[in-house]
Length: 202
Image 1 (tube, one colour):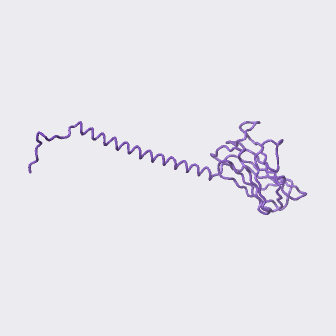
Image 2 (cartoon, rainbow, N blue to C red):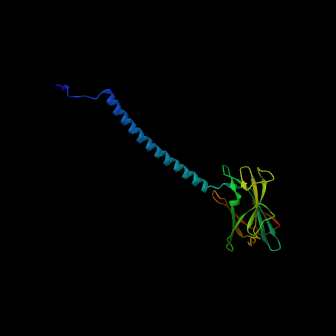
Image 3 (tube, helix red, strand yellow):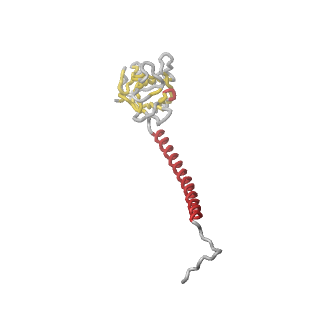
């Protein structure tokens, strides 16, 4: 079999023309690849943000330190107030106490109330606010309203002044609701006998 020969009117690709076509194909492929990779990176980033936000909302950013102590009114045989200490959980973000709400629930009579933060005893309304005594603050004697790493805040909830009647053996729940992160519920039970000072949880 004989291969046909090129005549005078037949032309082939020159090296330059072949290079131009090849570069065009490579350029188009690179553009499409960049677009696809960019879309993939964007989707991955959004997925990571969603996961991090979900973890942040699902995990508690604070934890209890030490015992939970209550004071009682022996004449009425009821709990007057409860005091507990909070600190940030490992890796937790600072908590703005101005936006942190404490909810008290007494299932026995269905009573329920939300209390807001107050750091000054002079303006404290025990019926609607909880008091914070800073056990340790990074700002020293003039603490701000943020619970930060290494800081410890002693919280006092005035149950009787808030209108709660907690008798011996009554169950009640104190739930701390920070602005970011899951709520921290504290399930407590009044002792069989109400004393001046009681340890509800060690």
